[in-house]
Amino acid sequence: MVLLDDEWLNYCKFDTIVVVEIPKALRQTFKRIWNKKFGILHQWNDSNAVRKLLCNKEGGKQSIKLLTNKSYEKWDTTALCKFTLYAKSFATRDSKGDLKTLDELYIKPRGPNPSGQFHSSVISANGNIDETYALAIDQLRLLRNWCSHSTRAEMDKTTFDRFVKLAKDAFKALSVNTDDIDAITSGRYLLSSALKWVKSRHEGVFYRPREKIERSGNQMTSKRRWSISKPVLLLGISNISSIQQRRVAS
Image 1 (cartoon, rainbow, N blue to C red):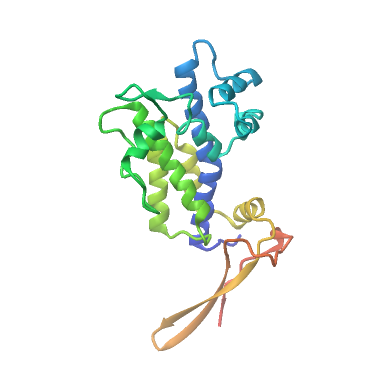
Image 2 (cartoon, rainbow, N blue to C red):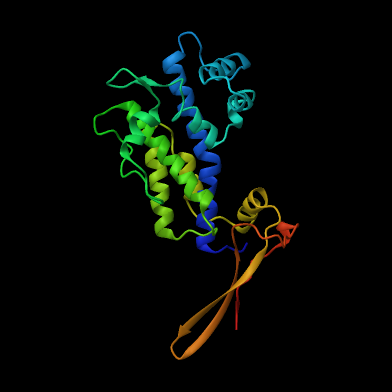
């Protein structure tokens, strides 16, 4: 089976971490924080009753009802950050006695986060578990944002290795197992696996040949490889599985 371009495969792998593993980690974290605060009377069991309780604690607006009317297994990263980092339910009092969310207590005071910048550490310097949770959740949010705002479905090895480490460090800070991340990042995706990713994430993807000129001694060599660009082009190919990667030297 043919192997795809390394930089695109890196993107596929990291996008899988973002889309699948980060929401799973945030669900575990949400459930842990909820049970720690309300578990004596209201263990989180994802029932309509407990989700209605969450809705009421968050103010009961229509936008909240739309989320709490469905299982938390269907919440995406945005919703999960809303119910953890920005949740009124988990607000605690600051030194002045005012109720503050985790974001207001531990993230906002750090000031604006420059585009592309991540937290240097997700472990509280004071050993404050709430601060550690806030930093780790925000780190995962920043990684998700990077992937969502990326204009090309490519990631070089240096960036890939760094981002995987950032994700794993955040998972460990949240006491979430990283075995699934290791499974995704180990080895190389085969063509069939990568094409499944394409079909699930980008229906109607258009593959285009990209020319690469290489010099070897006094000779110029032209190599052509197939790549995928974001955003998705509208010149779609409906039968993704029939696409084969080609590398042609002339």
